[in-house]
Structures are given as structure tokens and as C-alpha cells.
Length: 273
Image (cartoon, rainbow, N blue to C red):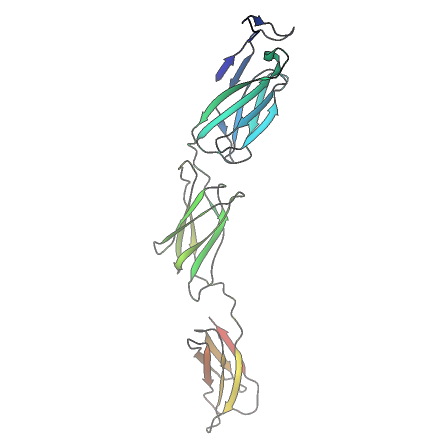
């Protein structure tokens, strides 16, 4: 523990005794900081009961409190901390002869060697037909850099927000395979990797096809034409229960004819990506 003993003197350098009941040489101290499970940092130490304490953490944030009746203080950051120096300022009015408080300033260094928790995965989804850019969402240590290595060997990175949430999308279309997710904190500590198996199932909502025309051919068959999403498979079920499939072209147009002559009836058109 870093400690400091102080006395108060007057203009002639004569030591001024403290008020009755208080130690002649107050001792102020700060223990090595300790990291909590959520990445925040707690700074504890000793001073005189009732003293005001301010801790400025390595990232510039601060916490304030007072020394308890046993002479101890303990303050915790509100944000995740990495390697840095914490500055403890203690205002102790008794060492200034009752005038303006003379602050006591102590410092404590913190070297972050604790790896962040392994990232979790909340969802994995793609909007492509049969495989597209893959978006993975989940939770990691707040502020950590999250890196994903995809099944095809490509990678993408992002940062977990203040609540620890992340959402990262691949730069290329992905098929079924295993993705590996790792979190790295600001001190360069790496988490244990997390793996997720992507099955390759697309999550796109298919747009319903339109029917722009229904025409009877000279042989009694009928042809339906319309528009759907480019590349969709079009299945037409005709009034007699038979069906024919086709494909929407690059502009989304399709044209599908029955294999048999049709009488009056209802045709149903279905699109599948």
C-alpha cells in the first residue's frame, strides 16, 4: 500500500498539533487497485474518518465518496478500466489549521492482465438467397473489439457498445459453416474464442409474385406471366391440380405455361428464394 504521513506547520515552520482526539501524523494510503468481474476497477485505502475522497481513473472518469468511521474508503469506477494510473485526492481539513483544506494526492498504477469474458452469440442471420452476408449479434465486454473469423476464412471486426452489445456483418456471402468470435480489450488481452455453427438457412422474407397476364395458347394450355424477385423459383398450380415451375429472370420477370390444356379454374402462383 502507498502511504503518506503529513503534519501541519505555521509560517515559522512550527508543527501545529491537530485538534484533541486526532492522530498527530495522519496516515493516508491507497492499496493496489482491484478489477471486478464486469471490468470496472475498485480503489481502496485509508484516511481520516469524514475526509472527502476523489478518485480519477485512467480513462479520465472519476468517483467520489467519504472516508467511513473506521478510516477506510473504497470507490469503484462506473466504466470498464484498462491499464493506467489512478489518482486519489483526499481533502483533509485538519492538516490545514482549520483553513482551506490541503489536498493529499496519491497515485496507484493498474496493469490490466485479465482477459475479457468470452463473447456470447444472440443471433446469426443472412438475407441472401442460399447464403449472403452474415450478421452475428451478441454480447461481449463493453468497449472491447470483437473479431469474427468466418467459415470461408474472411473476417470482420466491430466494437461492443457501452452495454456490451455488438453486431457485425461479414463482407462477403456466407454458406453453412463455423464462425469463431473473439473479444480483445483495450489492454490487448484476448478472450477465449466462442464458436457458432451457421446452418446456411436464409431469413429473407420473400416478396409475393404478381400475375400480370393469363393467356390461353392454341393447344389449350395457358401461360401466366408476371414479376417476382430476380432468381426466385416460380411454381404455378393450375386449376386441374397440375403444376409447372420456372425461374424469374435477372429483371424479375417470369413466364410459366401449363403442361396440359386447362379449362376454367383458379391458378396459384408461389415464389421461393
